[in-house]
Image 1 (tube, rainbow, N blue to C red):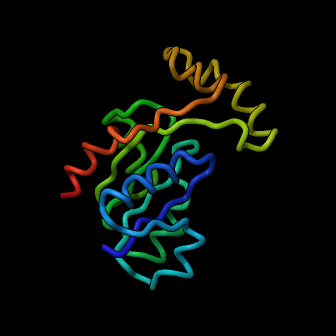
Image 2: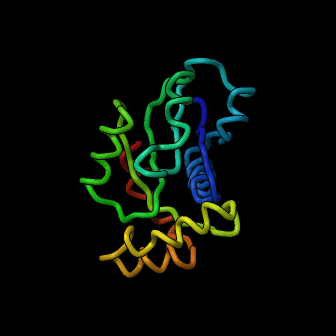
Image 3: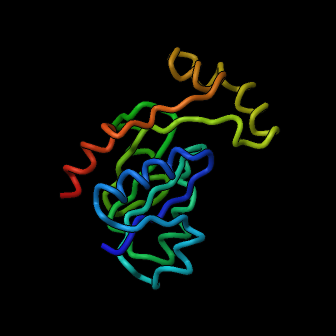
Length: 154
């Protein structure tokens, strides 16, 4: 394994990349940095944030590197159904893991902030915790969230 490569929007994916980097003793690079630091087809772990069931940066990373594991970071709770949907829609053929991230409104552009707040009732109608996240922002990132992932990677 050469490195951890990530695509992050509001920072939660980057936080997980740094945690994994520390635990696995691997460097971590944003997808832009990786282009300068890594060779084509190097073995990597890729982390990407999820927007509308698309793992951001995945296609770009897949074309350039040999991805050993993909980690999708999103707002929803982890579920087998959600992970399966992400795997199918993104055509992920390596192992896919899902970590719950968060939402930092102060790091989003104004249009996206307004849009998310406007559709929050529809997105999170049955989940009060998720509804609060979409209305106020917040983070579910915790080091314990990567424990199960680390066991699978061993």
